[in-house]
Length: 274
Image 1 (cartoon, helix red, strand yellow):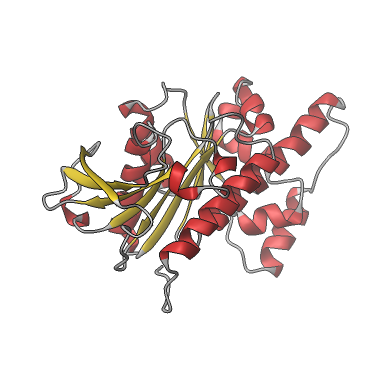
Image 2 (cartoon, one colour):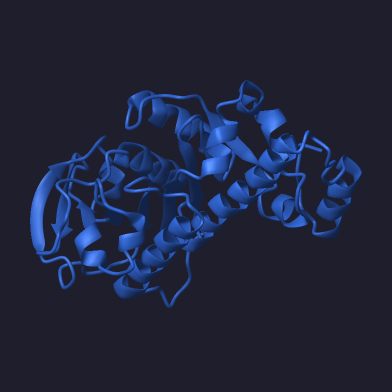
């Protein structure tokens, strides 16, 4: 999928990132400096009016096919809740250089970070995978750390993909409609590691959201950054229901498989978990 003209301008994209970051903070999914956001933009935009300072940085992997393309990325150690108040201080604009091994990083004089998020290797790899697969001219990747879904991932049963999805997708009709592909799962690996990047790529190949076990969620969208954040909110809401049910001695049944199949049929949704 690709965004259609008229394309959003830089200010609109930055505002959407700020709103997504604020919402993730409101649902307690980004304590302190937890979480990060990146957006790929496949149409011409000039970043230097907002981000006038330039430097050359090495990229986590060479992406020669993305030469000249622009990414907006959160800075390492920055709070998602602060982006909306001062985006120039918390974001960088990265343009991939010819050959794809380096990029021009544009930042503001108010920059409050030394480097881009330490998990940009996973972000860049996911963007690259989805651009290759669909040819999209827009793609957003959001990482956050919602309390309830992370807690569930510390329980072995919920680290099984089928078990996890059957237990989370049963709590509200909207959940199967918005997440019919369910969640993928990446086992725990150290943040920023090559192993985590590889596991994330595998999980996001067929799912719009991946659970980083004992760490958080990563969601993607080729429609908007707020759509990616919405997916995190839907998952966390489902996890909250599941947590409440565990605390309540598993007394609630949730939607039955028959009821979920009826919802899917009514909304022409293809799903494979029920």
